[in-house]
Length: 538
Image (cartoon, rainbow, N blue to C red; front, side, top):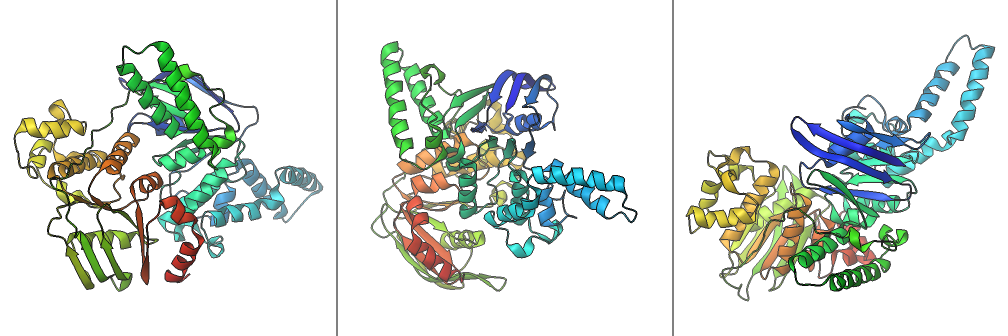
């Protein structure tokens, strides 16, 4: 249990949040949301003791242990993988070291024997005899093969280190668990493993994530950091988003009577509860909405960008035909024997266990690079817009935002361009900001404004949610669902894929699988997964 009392955090004149009074209880997972810079990670660091609050206090239950997902990937470089995980349980690790030091003494005394006995008793109480096997099971579940368990951390790559540090945080079932972006660099199977693990975790969890599907799968409550305040809501991210949007709509309907509004909200809760009860996710197990007070539901104060893609013309019957495409980089085959035809209405997600393969494919399809072999034929009615994985070359100039956007616009008047930039939340003097100093999220919003102006009927999108906050991701997601053109994309965002794509093409070094299906259905199709393992040579 974690109790926060009268908490305030201020940096200089900027107040992140103040007068925060919350209690986080066992058996619940609290998903923390907020705009970029709102203070999500800072809030976790205050709870962990890494940052001192300006005022107020944080208290834990008597004797409770706190575990935090470490962000320093080099901190444990001189330790073995298994020891790094064991170090996550500090009291147990201290006992292990004290025991080892005692038994290594050349002049082991009777007094040492008594102390060793006491340590052995504490060791057993902490289930120390199963510690190594428990740590190994965590590592295996997170995709760290057994041959790496006794390697030193410095010999692991960045993605492997992330998984070891996650195993360290989970080890020993801490009473309180703080996770900041735990799904970063995890593949879909490992994320599913983590979702199931946290769904059955009986203690207190607080998690920051931009992965909406992950938040929906694990969260029983939502912590919203907004406008210098922190509010606790029952329900997962989707419930918070949909209910806040409904409350906003009601707020705008000034003539609606209070009784009608309450009835509408109650009907929404009932519908949402019915949908949740059909799922296997944590939200149903916790019955999060049973005691919900309608007064808790209120409109979000957050701003969502206005993303609307309107094709200048409808695509004709011929969209795209690809035949026998292959690509090798530095002698490594990323894909081969790739052939497909894109039809009207297709919204295709390209998947691969090798991320470079899907990026290479989109580059080839857009003409950024040449394939080693194969033919690409675009229809004459097709107008394309491309959102590349690396957009840095677009911003390597001295232009300000409005002049940068004018490069891609048929109308270069400032009034016209301000309309698009305003939709992407650039206002006032912000439009004169040099593009070379923009953040990753700001650059993505500029690229989206560029695509809106181009009015293309086909969008090629490489990891479109990168660098975006939840509000921008949600708006982008909604716009692609409504988009009447063709979408060819790759993404790591489960919810984005599941709601946008109606067709999945997974490419491997040895061929491909092409299936019209929802993403969830695709992942659970055993025959598809068996065929994929064969194509990947596993």
